[in-house]
Length: 357
Image 1 (cartoon, rainbow, N blue to C red):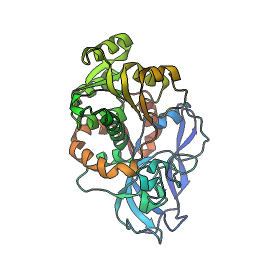
Image 2: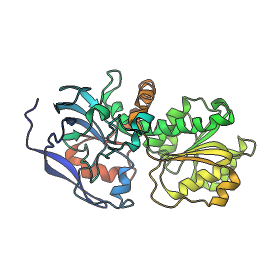
Image 3: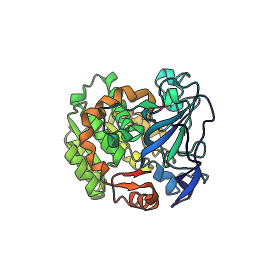
Image 4: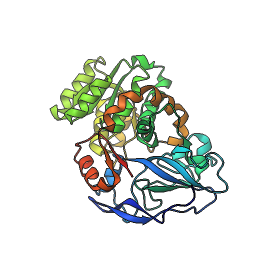
């Protein structure tokens, strides 16, 4: 399986709202810890829209994509955990699983961390992709999870799971059982819907879902959350949450959007001593003052999901609930049509886009 072509098709970023499918060299092993994977499926993630839309300024010329599943076709001499022919999935960041952060369940901040689909490391929206530190990064695909669902494990499902898990863990010091908690998920895109499914595993007393897109809110309702459309007014939304919490506000808010107004909404919905678990990719100021935070005694956890660290916990939850995500697989396109796929996703006309090289 070591004889590979010299060129491949890949989705390349050229600036805001500009991607193109181009011929690129097939990646080669650069280190004995590397593997080369032939991509079987690769997806478009909502966090990539921050770059695509120009909200997150970025250099150009790199291959996009940090969600992919594929087969190992080359392996460096130091690779022990996977072998030629193995089907693997990789988190969206490289993890060595040996440094301080990786050994303390914080793989998102691995000292060797690289983000797939960035100027530092070409991504998986291509026919082939190189995975550095393969023993720490790549994971053999569990046979009980469908390939389409498995691609969710690269980013969006563990991120949603992490947001939910963090919220309930932050409530534990207050000795509030999950079954008594009123929880709000802000943002019902793919990650938000994964957070809803994960939050329901804790069986909260009430779960709300906030968005403005009717189709997304309907999906949230079908999954088991009460939908709240913020276009109907913030006060109405706040009042509904107060109605089910004896006027206090939400015990926990899981913020998935990554925009300051959404984070402010999370703050406003929260009761005193409530918790915010923010997994959105933020690039602006925190939208509350120190005095406001002091006056509410809030606790906030923000940042990137340590996917590799939580995979052992998240995989069984996905396996149990994978049939609930069939709606995410309604748009499967050839990689050659990636430009159209980006436009559809950018316009929120589809829940998820999966490319087949």
